[in-house]
Amino acid sequence: MREMKILPGRRAFLRGLGATLALPGFSSLGLAKPLAGARGITASGAPLRMAYLCLPNGVIMDKWRPQGVGEKFVLNDSMKSLEDASPDIQIVKGLEQANGWGGRDGAGDHARGNATFLTGTRPRKTSGSDIRLGISVDQMAANYLAQETRLPSLELSCDGVRKSGSCDSGYSCAYQYNISWRSSTQPMTPESNPRLVFERLFGSGSQSERGESQARRRAEKRSILDFVLEDAKAMEKSLGRNDQQKLDEYMTGVREIERQIEKAESIGPPPDPGVEPPANGAPREYHEHIRIMFEMMILAFQTDQTRIASFLLAHDGSNRNFPTHGVREGHHGLSHHGGNRSKIEKIAKIDTFYLEQLAYFLERMRNTKDVDGKPLLYNSMIVWGGGLSDGDRHTHNDLPIILAGNAGGKFRTGRHVDLKGDVPMNNLYLRMLDEIGAPAGRLGDSTGILSQV
Image 1 (cartoon, helix red, strand yellow):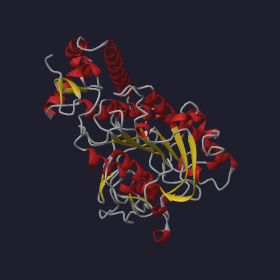
Image 2 (cartoon, helix red, strand yellow):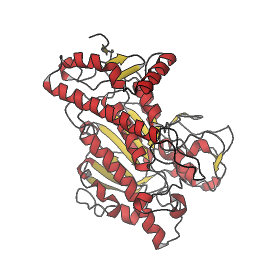
Image 3 (cartoon, one colour):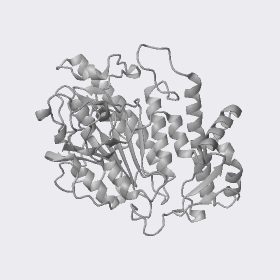
Image 4 (cartoon, helix red, strand yellow):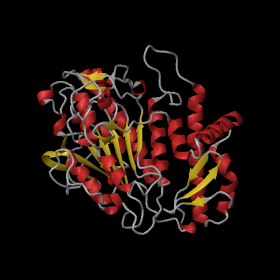
């Protein structure tokens, strides 16, 4: 086999000019489990993944919060799409990011909501270059697992990139458009263009080789898979029947993602509506953009290119509208509803939209087999939520948090957990870091490891 290569961590790659196709674990090749002594491994030998999915502007809690607690709960109106996923999730009531509250810093709750979501740290109020926050939980995990995967972490967004300027009541845009922070002064800029994410996951070689590969593929309308197909066919002969099927399903999935990206690129940007157009390569429909980014995350997890991801679906304060759900007004404007019933109903539709995207992601994670034969979701810890609860009053307690996945058997799913008070969100993050084995004495205002999940 000319170009297949197995790296020290026993991950297999097929290579072509400027293209690398990372492969899932195959038991036929002895690739089912990471090397002994590797970090962040479940009891069954599969990698433990961690993802943080952030949405904006709070929710209508009366239509969001389930009825009943423990295992006997009933999903509320906004959450109906999660019915099939309910055995794999925990809805957690009572989590707070206390450093999101205004206090002496006054207005700017949207910036603080984004900034504190994964860091638990109060941002320095500045619109200049002297930003200061704190390292985020995903980067603490990425630092610990850095030697285990090709990419320490993956940062995604459906927004444009803004790292400077004033965005919210004197707060830098860096706080409002980034949730992942490498250090107190350095955000991890998320990528919103699916094409660039795809190239990051599958590009290799020098910059000139990647450029040549991309130019050739576009000129000849060829897929990345075409560059590695010869080696894939040779490899298939050495696989057992189950692994042959797994390879075929995986490569079909990669081809489908390429097809979606090419479709989006062929359509091009829409006519100028008077606002900033979407980034090149991004699907026109918002739900399609979200879902293709979810597919990227799943591919990255499935091939163990990274185990840590963050996804800013939209920055806090986003004023996007949702025509697919009959909402033409901007989200942020509606969130200041002042008790207006019509506005509340429209925000509830937006909440429904976002939870439908989560339902899609969790279904795909359940239906993707991991190296130990279990669903990828079983060996994952997925946090879904945001830095605001009530968008009208800008509250930072009782946050809308869903915890999905079993953490390899360590989490007790299928429950609505009431913590009965305001508990630091960062206690949950300490628990997640503890599960991957990462040492962390404290994060933000944490008071200890959350045991109730």
